[in-house]
Image (cartoon, rainbow, N blue to C red; front, side, top):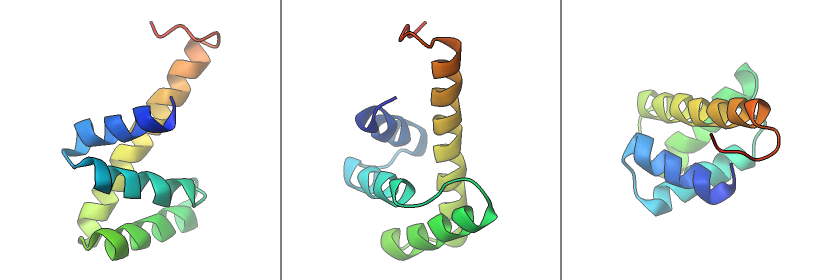
Length: 84
């Protein structure tokens, strides 16, 4: 999954515009996503930059992690690029 695919998946799952999804992608790219400290840092930045509640930021984080996990799973199942 490339950057634009991830942004498009965020748009679809979160029903947000391109600009907000691009900001979410940037925040996630700039932080270590695994672990409690990484999660807390990402959520704090989402709250600050998107001007949303912590609950909304947690939902965005969880949806983004679902997308990332599905991309990793797909890559592991199809290591040679097949998108089946």
